[in-house]
Image (cartoon, rainbow, N blue to C red):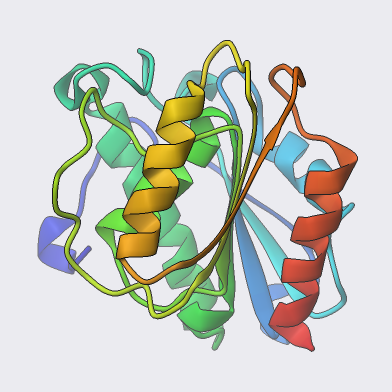
Length: 217
């Protein structure tokens, strides 16, 4: 997003909750986006399980704890201005890390549920090399996915983890999201867990912990 494209919506001027290594001393950063009805602070606590020394944690807070009002499968316009404002919140957090000297290729997006959808959408709409994407129970936003997401993700590592019977995230959308990101030259790992429900399991946390470690190794 260029300065000319800047969005001023419901999630701007909300708190950016921080944790982990102080940004001024960090080599890498995680930008953490919470789920519907949850909090940035909760994401910081969750990220404590995957944190490594040298990694700053930055978690934007959604206004009223919700990034957008409807299902991520609704027509995009029904989730505005929340969707665009949420994407701007991610952009602002990345900019804060960049301003502290952390390059985007050492910044990893991590989201759960609604936050995973938003993080996935950000990556696809702003293609370049990132430190990674970990989308727990999420996928690209919209009733129908665009036929063409232009741009090159330059082998950005991506992890998509979800239940095969998630009540909010259809399995098909996880497959479609993986296909889109692979077409954009991401290095995608996709794991579907039988009968898990809507949550995060130990296998996912272990895998993503390894991704975080690679940011500072």
